[in-house]
Picture (spheres, each protein chain N blue to C red):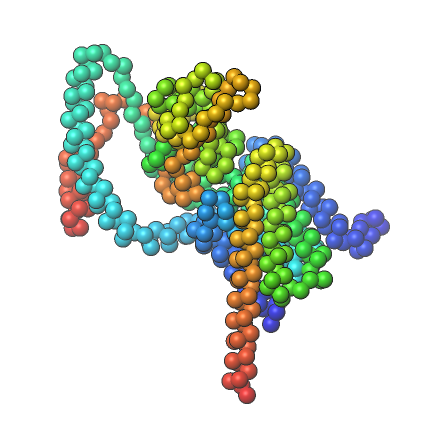
Length: 286
Length: 167
Protein backbone atom coordinates (compact mmCIF):
# COMPACT_ATOMS: atom_id res chain seq x y z
CA UNK A 1 0.00 0.00 0.00
CA UNK A 2 2.72 2.58 0.85
CA UNK A 3 4.21 2.05 -2.60
CA UNK A 4 0.92 2.94 -4.26
CA UNK A 5 0.54 5.95 -2.00
CA UNK A 6 4.02 7.16 -2.89
CA UNK A 7 3.38 6.60 -6.58
CA UNK A 8 0.03 8.36 -6.55
CA UNK A 9 1.03 11.29 -4.35
CA UNK A 10 4.64 12.03 -5.15
CA UNK A 11 4.81 10.84 -8.75
CA UNK A 12 1.21 11.35 -9.74
CA UNK A 13 1.90 12.58 -13.29
CA UNK A 14 4.37 9.85 -14.17
CA UNK A 15 2.20 7.15 -12.60
CA UNK A 16 -0.83 8.34 -14.58
CA UNK A 17 1.16 8.31 -17.80
CA UNK A 18 2.56 4.85 -17.03
CA UNK A 19 -0.94 3.47 -16.34
CA UNK A 20 -2.35 5.02 -19.52
CA UNK A 21 0.60 3.79 -21.61
CA UNK A 22 0.14 0.32 -20.17
CA UNK A 23 -3.59 0.46 -20.93
CA UNK A 24 -2.92 1.62 -24.54
CA UNK A 25 -0.35 -1.11 -25.15
CA UNK A 26 -2.71 -3.69 -23.62
CA UNK A 27 -5.43 -2.52 -26.03
CA UNK A 28 -3.00 -2.99 -28.93
CA UNK A 29 -2.21 -6.51 -27.76
CA UNK A 30 -5.84 -7.65 -27.48
CA UNK A 31 -6.59 -10.34 -30.09
CA UNK A 32 -8.31 -9.01 -33.22
CA UNK A 33 -11.80 -10.56 -32.65
CA UNK A 34 -12.01 -9.24 -29.09
CA UNK A 35 -10.82 -5.81 -30.27
CA UNK A 36 -13.61 -5.73 -32.83
CA UNK A 37 -16.24 -6.79 -30.31
CA UNK A 38 -15.11 -4.10 -27.88
CA UNK A 39 -15.18 -1.41 -30.55
CA UNK A 40 -18.53 -2.60 -31.96
CA UNK A 41 -20.23 -2.56 -28.58
CA UNK A 42 -18.93 0.88 -27.71
CA UNK A 43 -19.62 2.44 -31.11
CA UNK A 44 -23.07 0.95 -31.54
CA UNK A 45 -24.16 2.28 -28.20
CA UNK A 46 -22.63 5.73 -28.44
CA UNK A 47 -22.39 6.92 -32.01
CA UNK A 48 -25.19 5.47 -34.08
CA UNK A 49 -27.88 7.99 -32.96
CA UNK A 50 -25.52 10.96 -33.51
CA UNK A 51 -24.59 9.90 -37.02
CA UNK A 52 -28.22 9.22 -37.89
CA UNK A 53 -29.22 12.73 -36.84
CA UNK A 54 -26.27 14.31 -38.66
CA UNK A 55 -26.96 12.41 -41.86
CA UNK A 56 -30.65 13.25 -41.63
CA UNK A 57 -29.81 16.97 -41.39
CA UNK A 58 -27.30 16.68 -44.25
CA UNK A 59 -29.95 14.94 -46.34
CA UNK A 60 -32.50 17.69 -45.70
CA UNK A 61 -30.10 20.27 -47.07
CA UNK A 62 -29.43 18.42 -50.29
CA UNK A 63 -32.84 16.90 -50.90
CA UNK A 64 -34.06 19.48 -53.44
CA UNK A 65 -30.97 19.24 -55.59
CA UNK A 66 -31.00 15.48 -55.29
CA UNK A 67 -34.67 15.35 -56.28
CA UNK A 68 -34.14 17.17 -59.57
CA UNK A 69 -31.09 15.03 -60.26
CA UNK A 70 -33.12 11.90 -59.56
CA UNK A 71 -35.87 13.03 -61.96
CA UNK A 72 -33.29 13.49 -64.66
CA UNK A 73 -31.80 10.10 -63.84
CA UNK A 74 -35.19 8.35 -63.88
CA UNK A 75 -35.95 9.75 -67.34
CA UNK A 76 -32.58 8.62 -68.59
CA UNK A 77 -32.93 5.20 -66.98
CA UNK A 78 -36.38 4.66 -68.45
CA UNK A 79 -34.97 5.26 -71.88
CA UNK A 80 -32.05 3.01 -71.19
CA UNK A 81 -34.30 0.30 -69.74
CA UNK A 82 -36.25 0.21 -72.94
CA UNK A 83 -33.10 -0.33 -74.94
CA UNK A 84 -31.81 -2.90 -72.46
CA UNK A 85 -35.04 -4.88 -72.62
CA UNK A 86 -34.61 -5.10 -76.34
CA UNK A 87 -30.98 -6.08 -75.94
CA UNK A 88 -31.95 -8.70 -73.38
CA UNK A 89 -34.45 -10.33 -75.70
CA UNK A 90 -31.99 -10.25 -78.56
CA UNK A 91 -29.18 -11.57 -76.44
CA UNK A 92 -31.39 -14.31 -75.06
CA UNK A 93 -32.09 -15.52 -78.56
CA UNK A 94 -28.40 -15.40 -79.43
CA UNK A 95 -27.44 -17.14 -76.22
CA UNK A 96 -29.77 -20.01 -76.91
CA UNK A 97 -28.29 -20.25 -80.36
CA UNK A 98 -24.71 -20.25 -79.26
CA UNK A 99 -25.39 -22.08 -75.96
CA UNK A 100 -23.55 -19.43 -74.05
CA UNK A 101 -22.89 -19.99 -70.41
CA UNK A 102 -25.59 -18.43 -68.31
CA UNK A 103 -24.36 -15.10 -67.06
CA UNK A 104 -25.08 -13.80 -63.61
CA UNK A 105 -26.45 -10.45 -62.48
CA UNK A 106 -26.00 -8.98 -59.07
CA UNK A 107 -28.54 -8.52 -56.32
CA UNK A 108 -27.48 -5.15 -54.91
CA UNK A 109 -28.60 -3.66 -51.62
CA UNK A 110 -28.34 0.14 -51.69
CA UNK A 111 -26.91 1.48 -48.45
CA UNK A 112 -26.19 4.88 -47.01
CA UNK A 113 -22.88 5.63 -45.39
CA UNK A 114 -23.71 6.68 -41.83
CA UNK A 115 -20.22 6.89 -40.44
CA UNK A 116 -16.57 6.76 -41.28
CA UNK A 117 -13.47 6.51 -39.19
CA UNK A 118 -11.99 9.76 -37.97
CA UNK A 119 -8.45 8.74 -38.75
CA UNK A 120 -6.45 10.18 -41.66
CA UNK A 121 -4.54 6.99 -42.33
CA UNK A 122 -7.10 4.22 -42.05
CA UNK A 123 -10.29 3.68 -43.88
CA UNK A 124 -13.52 2.00 -42.94
CA UNK A 125 -17.12 3.12 -43.26
CA UNK A 126 -20.32 2.28 -41.43
CA UNK A 127 -23.42 1.59 -43.55
CA UNK A 128 -27.06 1.66 -42.53
CA UNK A 129 -27.88 -1.96 -43.40
CA UNK A 130 -27.12 -4.95 -41.23
CA UNK A 131 -28.20 -8.45 -40.30
CA UNK A 132 -31.88 -7.46 -40.55
CA UNK A 133 -31.30 -6.77 -44.27
CA UNK A 134 -29.52 -10.11 -44.78
CA UNK A 135 -26.09 -8.50 -44.91
CA UNK A 136 -23.31 -10.95 -44.07
CA UNK A 137 -19.59 -10.57 -43.52
CA UNK A 138 -17.26 -10.77 -46.56
CA UNK A 139 -20.01 -9.51 -48.89
CA UNK A 140 -18.48 -7.24 -51.56
CA UNK A 141 -19.37 -3.54 -51.62
CA UNK A 142 -19.56 -1.39 -54.75
CA UNK A 143 -19.96 2.29 -55.47
CA UNK A 144 -21.15 3.89 -58.70
CA UNK A 145 -17.53 3.98 -59.86
CA UNK A 146 -16.45 0.44 -58.94
CA UNK A 147 -15.44 -1.95 -56.19
CA UNK A 148 -14.77 -0.23 -52.87
CA UNK A 149 -14.36 -2.97 -50.25
CA UNK A 150 -16.04 -5.71 -48.27
CA UNK A 151 -18.23 -6.08 -45.21
CA UNK A 152 -16.15 -6.97 -42.19
CA UNK A 153 -18.63 -6.76 -39.33
CA UNK A 154 -22.39 -6.99 -39.25
CA UNK A 155 -24.69 -5.69 -36.54
CA UNK A 156 -28.46 -5.62 -36.34
CA UNK A 157 -29.01 -2.44 -38.34
CA UNK A 158 -25.56 -1.45 -39.49
CA UNK A 159 -22.35 -2.94 -40.83
CA UNK A 160 -18.72 -2.03 -41.15
CA UNK A 161 -17.08 -1.98 -44.53
CA UNK A 162 -13.34 -2.12 -44.84
CA UNK A 163 -12.34 -0.13 -47.92
CA UNK A 164 -9.70 -1.24 -50.38
CA UNK A 165 -7.67 1.83 -49.45
CA UNK A 166 -6.57 0.02 -46.31
CA UNK A 167 -3.21 -1.55 -45.83
CA UNK A 168 -4.57 -4.98 -45.02
CA UNK A 169 -7.19 -5.34 -47.75
CA UNK A 170 -5.53 -6.40 -51.02
CA UNK A 171 -7.70 -7.25 -54.04
CA UNK A 172 -7.05 -9.71 -56.83
CA UNK A 173 -7.35 -7.86 -60.14
CA UNK A 174 -7.02 -8.14 -63.90
CA UNK A 175 -5.58 -5.83 -66.49
CA UNK A 176 -8.66 -5.22 -68.63
CA UNK A 177 -6.65 -5.05 -71.87
CA UNK A 178 -4.02 -7.79 -71.46
CA UNK A 179 -5.81 -9.94 -68.81
CA UNK A 180 -2.67 -10.01 -66.63
CA UNK A 181 -3.55 -10.99 -63.06
CA UNK A 182 -2.08 -9.23 -60.04
CA UNK A 183 -2.76 -8.21 -56.47
CA UNK A 184 -3.72 -4.59 -55.90
CA UNK A 185 -2.58 -3.07 -52.62
CA UNK A 186 -3.18 0.44 -51.32
CA UNK A 187 -0.12 2.62 -50.90
CA UNK A 188 -1.41 6.10 -50.00
CA UNK A 189 -4.09 8.67 -50.87
CA UNK A 190 -5.91 7.15 -53.86
CA UNK A 191 -2.74 5.46 -55.11
CA UNK A 192 -2.34 1.71 -55.29
CA UNK A 193 0.43 -0.71 -56.15
CA UNK A 194 -0.03 -3.74 -58.37
CA UNK A 195 1.94 -6.65 -56.94
CA UNK A 196 3.01 -10.03 -58.30
CA UNK A 197 3.54 -8.83 -61.86
CA UNK A 198 6.62 -10.06 -63.69
CA UNK A 199 8.64 -8.22 -66.34
CA UNK A 200 7.22 -10.46 -69.08
CA UNK A 201 3.66 -9.43 -68.23
CA UNK A 202 2.05 -6.90 -70.51
CA UNK A 203 1.03 -3.97 -68.31
CA UNK A 204 1.07 -0.44 -69.72
CA UNK A 205 0.36 3.05 -68.46
CA UNK A 206 -3.31 3.86 -69.04
CA UNK A 207 -4.52 0.27 -68.64
CA UNK A 208 -7.67 -0.16 -66.58
CA UNK A 209 -7.57 -2.61 -63.68
CA UNK A 210 -10.72 -4.54 -62.85
CA UNK A 211 -11.63 -7.08 -60.18
CA UNK A 212 -10.67 -10.60 -61.23
CA UNK A 213 -13.35 -12.45 -59.28
CA UNK A 214 -10.70 -14.84 -57.99
CA UNK A 215 -11.05 -15.86 -54.38
CA UNK A 216 -14.79 -15.25 -54.45
CA UNK A 217 -14.63 -11.99 -52.48
CA UNK A 218 -15.09 -9.34 -55.17
CA UNK A 219 -17.32 -10.00 -58.19
CA UNK A 220 -15.50 -10.01 -61.50
CA UNK A 221 -15.28 -7.00 -63.79
CA UNK A 222 -15.61 -3.95 -61.55
CA UNK A 223 -13.17 -1.07 -62.11
CA UNK A 224 -10.45 -0.56 -59.50
CA UNK A 225 -8.19 2.02 -61.08
CA UNK A 226 -5.93 3.05 -63.91
CA UNK A 227 -2.23 2.24 -64.26
CA UNK A 228 -0.14 5.42 -63.94
CA UNK A 229 3.44 4.18 -63.73
CA UNK A 230 5.26 1.00 -64.78
CA UNK A 231 8.93 0.31 -64.18
CA UNK A 232 11.21 -2.64 -63.65
CA UNK A 233 12.07 -3.59 -60.06
CA UNK A 234 15.69 -3.79 -58.88
CA UNK A 235 15.45 -7.60 -58.80
CA UNK A 236 15.02 -7.63 -62.58
CA UNK A 237 12.17 -10.14 -62.51
CA UNK A 238 9.17 -8.16 -61.38
CA UNK A 239 7.51 -4.89 -62.30
CA UNK A 240 6.66 -1.99 -60.03
CA UNK A 241 3.23 -0.91 -61.16
CA UNK A 242 1.39 2.06 -59.69
CA UNK A 243 -2.29 2.72 -60.21
CA UNK A 244 -4.70 5.39 -59.17
CA UNK A 245 -8.38 5.00 -58.32
CA UNK A 246 -11.11 7.36 -59.53
CA UNK A 247 -13.13 6.76 -56.40
CA UNK A 248 -13.01 9.42 -53.72
CA UNK A 249 -13.08 7.14 -50.72
CA UNK A 250 -13.41 10.01 -48.27
CA UNK A 251 -16.68 11.24 -49.71
CA UNK A 252 -18.60 8.02 -50.27
CA UNK A 253 -22.27 8.60 -49.49
CA UNK A 254 -24.07 5.68 -51.09
CA UNK A 255 -22.73 2.21 -51.70
CA UNK A 256 -24.20 -1.13 -52.77
CA UNK A 257 -23.67 -4.41 -50.99
CA UNK A 258 -23.64 -7.38 -53.37
CA UNK A 259 -26.02 -9.72 -51.59
CA UNK A 260 -26.35 -12.36 -54.24
CA UNK A 261 -26.11 -13.05 -57.93
CA UNK A 262 -29.24 -13.33 -60.06
CA UNK A 263 -29.47 -15.34 -63.27
CA UNK A 264 -29.93 -13.11 -66.30
CA UNK A 265 -33.42 -14.34 -67.21
CA UNK A 266 -34.68 -13.61 -63.70
CA UNK A 267 -33.25 -10.09 -63.55
CA UNK A 268 -36.04 -7.56 -63.02
CA UNK A 269 -36.11 -4.40 -65.09
CA UNK A 270 -38.53 -1.61 -64.50
CA UNK A 271 -42.07 -2.95 -64.83
CA UNK A 272 -44.50 -0.97 -67.07
CA UNK A 273 -47.09 -1.26 -64.28
CA UNK A 274 -44.90 1.10 -62.29
CA UNK A 275 -45.47 3.83 -64.87
CA UNK A 276 -47.91 5.67 -62.58
CA UNK A 277 -45.18 5.95 -60.00
CA UNK A 278 -42.67 7.07 -62.61
CA UNK A 279 -45.08 9.72 -63.93
CA UNK A 280 -45.65 11.05 -60.45
CA UNK A 281 -41.90 11.31 -59.93
CA UNK A 282 -41.30 12.98 -63.28
CA UNK A 283 -44.37 15.19 -63.32
CA UNK A 284 -44.33 16.07 -59.65
CA UNK A 285 -47.93 14.87 -59.10
CA UNK A 286 -49.95 11.60 -58.98
CA UNK B 1 -12.40 35.09 -18.53
CA UNK B 2 -9.48 32.97 -19.72
CA UNK B 3 -11.23 29.83 -18.47
CA UNK B 4 -14.42 30.74 -20.32
CA UNK B 5 -12.43 31.44 -23.47
CA UNK B 6 -10.62 28.10 -23.23
CA UNK B 7 -13.96 26.34 -22.77
CA UNK B 8 -15.39 28.04 -25.86
CA UNK B 9 -12.30 27.13 -27.91
CA UNK B 10 -12.58 23.48 -26.84
CA UNK B 11 -16.28 23.36 -27.74
CA UNK B 12 -15.48 24.97 -31.09
CA UNK B 13 -12.77 22.40 -31.84
CA UNK B 14 -15.25 19.62 -31.05
CA UNK B 15 -17.95 21.15 -33.27
CA UNK B 16 -15.48 21.68 -36.10
CA UNK B 17 -14.38 18.03 -35.86
CA UNK B 18 -17.97 16.76 -35.95
CA UNK B 19 -19.36 19.13 -38.56
CA UNK B 20 -16.69 20.25 -40.99
CA UNK B 21 -13.59 18.11 -40.55
CA UNK B 22 -14.40 15.93 -43.59
CA UNK B 23 -15.21 18.94 -45.75
CA UNK B 24 -11.92 20.74 -45.13
CA UNK B 25 -9.69 17.68 -45.52
CA UNK B 26 -8.03 17.40 -48.91
CA UNK B 27 -6.25 14.22 -49.95
CA UNK B 28 -5.70 13.10 -46.35
CA UNK B 29 -4.34 16.55 -45.43
CA UNK B 30 -6.54 18.16 -42.81
CA UNK B 31 -6.54 19.68 -39.36
CA UNK B 32 -6.35 17.20 -36.50
CA UNK B 33 -9.05 18.58 -34.19
CA UNK B 34 -8.87 15.74 -31.64
CA UNK B 35 -5.18 16.57 -31.23
CA UNK B 36 -6.00 20.27 -30.81
CA UNK B 37 -8.58 19.40 -28.15
CA UNK B 38 -6.04 17.35 -26.20
CA UNK B 39 -3.27 19.94 -26.63
CA UNK B 40 -5.44 22.88 -25.63
CA UNK B 41 -6.92 21.05 -22.67
CA UNK B 42 -3.53 19.80 -21.46
CA UNK B 43 -1.97 23.28 -21.64
CA UNK B 44 -4.45 24.69 -19.17
CA UNK B 45 -5.17 21.63 -16.99
CA UNK B 46 -1.82 19.96 -16.41
CA UNK B 47 -0.23 16.62 -17.20
CA UNK B 48 -2.56 14.30 -15.25
CA UNK B 49 -5.80 15.61 -16.71
CA UNK B 50 -4.14 16.19 -20.08
CA UNK B 51 -2.97 12.62 -20.42
CA UNK B 52 -6.32 11.20 -19.24
CA UNK B 53 -8.24 13.34 -21.73
CA UNK B 54 -5.68 12.35 -24.39
CA UNK B 55 -6.30 8.71 -23.65
CA UNK B 56 -10.10 9.09 -23.77
CA UNK B 57 -10.09 11.12 -27.01
CA UNK B 58 -7.58 8.74 -28.62
CA UNK B 59 -9.52 5.67 -27.53
CA UNK B 60 -12.68 7.20 -28.99
CA UNK B 61 -10.86 7.67 -32.32
CA UNK B 62 -9.53 4.11 -32.14
CA UNK B 63 -13.04 2.71 -31.84
CA UNK B 64 -13.52 3.66 -35.50
CA UNK B 65 -10.65 1.46 -36.51
CA UNK B 66 -10.11 -1.37 -34.08
CA UNK B 67 -7.26 -2.77 -36.20
CA UNK B 68 -5.04 -0.30 -34.37
CA UNK B 69 -6.99 -0.06 -31.13
CA UNK B 70 -4.89 1.73 -28.53
CA UNK B 71 -2.55 3.53 -30.92
CA UNK B 72 -4.33 6.89 -30.86
CA UNK B 73 -4.92 6.44 -27.12
CA UNK B 74 -1.18 6.01 -26.62
CA UNK B 75 -0.05 8.90 -28.84
CA UNK B 76 -2.64 11.33 -27.51
CA UNK B 77 -2.01 10.50 -23.86
CA UNK B 78 1.70 11.16 -24.54
CA UNK B 79 0.77 14.49 -26.13
CA UNK B 80 -1.49 15.33 -23.15
CA UNK B 81 1.28 14.49 -20.73
CA UNK B 82 3.99 16.44 -22.56
CA UNK B 83 1.92 19.58 -23.07
CA UNK B 84 0.51 19.34 -19.55
CA UNK B 85 4.06 19.34 -18.18
CA UNK B 86 5.04 22.21 -20.45
CA UNK B 87 1.84 24.16 -19.85
CA UNK B 88 2.89 26.02 -16.73
CA UNK B 89 6.06 27.38 -18.36
CA UNK B 90 4.45 28.52 -21.61
CA UNK B 91 2.84 31.68 -22.91
CA UNK B 92 -0.55 30.14 -23.53
CA UNK B 93 -2.14 33.37 -24.68
CA UNK B 94 0.38 34.16 -27.39
CA UNK B 95 -1.09 33.05 -30.76
CA UNK B 96 2.33 32.82 -32.39
CA UNK B 97 3.60 30.60 -29.63
CA UNK B 98 0.48 28.43 -29.91
CA UNK B 99 0.97 28.21 -33.68
CA UNK B 100 4.46 26.79 -33.24
CA UNK B 101 3.46 24.55 -30.35
CA UNK B 102 0.49 23.02 -32.18
CA UNK B 103 2.63 22.43 -35.28
CA UNK B 104 5.43 20.71 -33.38
CA UNK B 105 2.92 18.67 -31.37
CA UNK B 106 1.15 17.49 -34.53
CA UNK B 107 4.45 16.47 -36.10
CA UNK B 108 5.59 14.61 -32.99
CA UNK B 109 2.21 12.91 -32.69
CA UNK B 110 2.28 11.68 -36.28
CA UNK B 111 5.90 10.61 -35.90
CA UNK B 112 5.05 8.18 -33.10
CA UNK B 113 1.76 7.18 -34.71
CA UNK B 114 3.28 6.39 -38.10
CA UNK B 115 6.19 4.43 -36.63
CA UNK B 116 3.69 1.94 -35.22
CA UNK B 117 1.16 2.23 -38.05
CA UNK B 118 3.72 1.47 -40.78
CA UNK B 119 5.27 -1.22 -38.55
CA UNK B 120 8.69 0.45 -38.93
CA UNK B 121 8.58 0.31 -42.72
CA UNK B 122 10.86 3.32 -43.00
CA UNK B 123 10.18 4.17 -46.66
CA UNK B 124 6.42 4.29 -46.12
CA UNK B 125 6.92 6.06 -42.83
CA UNK B 126 8.99 8.92 -44.25
CA UNK B 127 6.87 9.24 -47.39
CA UNK B 128 3.66 9.55 -45.39
CA UNK B 129 5.23 11.78 -42.75
CA UNK B 130 6.58 14.18 -45.35
CA UNK B 131 3.58 14.19 -47.71
CA UNK B 132 0.75 14.03 -45.15
CA UNK B 133 1.98 14.82 -41.67
CA UNK B 134 3.97 17.99 -42.39
CA UNK B 135 1.24 19.77 -44.40
CA UNK B 136 -1.37 18.53 -41.91
CA UNK B 137 0.69 19.88 -39.01
CA UNK B 138 0.86 23.31 -40.64
CA UNK B 139 -2.87 23.18 -41.32
CA UNK B 140 -3.64 22.05 -37.75
CA UNK B 141 -1.44 24.76 -36.23
CA UNK B 142 -2.98 27.51 -38.36
CA UNK B 143 -6.56 26.46 -37.58
CA UNK B 144 -5.79 26.02 -33.86
CA UNK B 145 -4.11 29.40 -33.47
CA UNK B 146 -6.77 31.13 -35.59
CA UNK B 147 -9.71 29.76 -33.57
CA UNK B 148 -7.93 30.68 -30.32
CA UNK B 149 -7.23 34.24 -31.51
CA UNK B 150 -10.76 34.83 -32.80
CA UNK B 151 -12.42 33.55 -29.61
CA UNK B 152 -10.13 35.48 -27.27
CA UNK B 153 -10.45 38.70 -29.28
CA UNK B 154 -14.26 38.40 -29.44
CA UNK B 155 -14.48 37.66 -25.74
CA UNK B 156 -12.31 40.69 -24.88
CA UNK B 157 -14.55 42.90 -27.02
CA UNK B 158 -17.71 41.53 -25.39
CA UNK B 159 -16.35 42.14 -21.89
CA UNK B 160 -15.22 45.66 -22.88
CA UNK B 161 -18.62 46.58 -24.30
CA UNK B 162 -20.38 45.17 -21.22
CA UNK B 163 -18.13 47.32 -19.01
CA UNK B 164 -18.96 50.45 -21.01
CA UNK B 165 -22.71 49.73 -20.80
CA UNK B 166 -22.57 49.39 -16.99
CA UNK B 167 -20.48 52.53 -16.50
